[in-house]
Structures are given as C-alpha cells and as structure tokens.
Amino acid sequence: MKSIKKTALKWRQKMEEAPRHLCPNDLSDEAFLEVLTRALWKKGMIVDIQGDFYTIIEA
Image 1: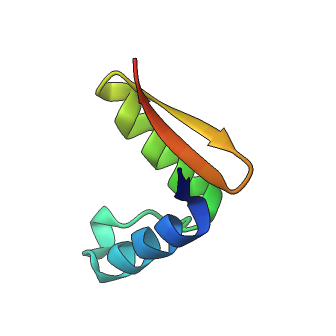
Image 2: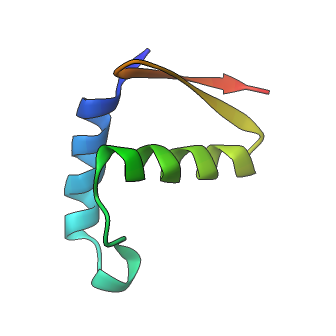
Image 3: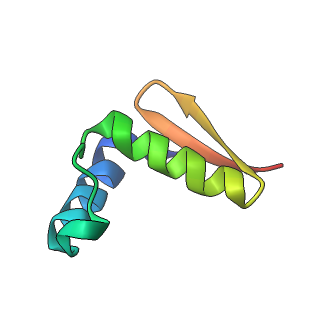
C-alpha cells in the first residue's frame, strides 16, 4: 500500500515544474487520485483506496 499524501506531494512537485499547459489547475490530493485512477483505468488497472492509502490492482 502506498500513502496518498506522500505520493500526491511528489506529484504536486512534478506538476509545479511542468510547463503551465501540462499542469492541471487543481493540485489537491483528490485531483491526484482522479488523475491516477483515470490513467490506470486506461491501462486496465484499478485503484483500491483505503483511508489514506491506495493499492493498484491489475484487472
């Protein structure tokens, strides 16, 4: 299981360094989970969220 807070913090830091047109306006933990869920769904994977942690499951 991975920590949502720690991973979202790393994601926010990367997004702040990215060109403005590639960076979403919302850099919240919820936005991170939405982006992660959408990206993994396209690859046929599922995000299992349990409190402040998540696990990636291959479908």
